[in-house]
Length: 88
Image (cartoon, rainbow, N blue to C red; front, side, top):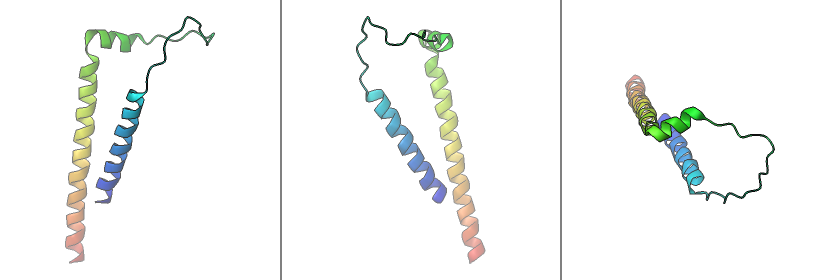
């Protein structure tokens, strides 16, 4: 059960920080450029966003993450059950 608690806390922190990042307002763009260095363009991300495939990538990553967490939770339950049997 310790693993489940650790995963739950980790997921809570992850979702809380992601929510905070999305909630921040975007600053208004001004015509004055503060950085003299050119900003790198990430063409792959722009292309994926334009084609709508970024959502497929996000869904696949979330599916893998949820599957991994579910596997770890079931494994933790099995180990806890075996430990309980060993004590009895």
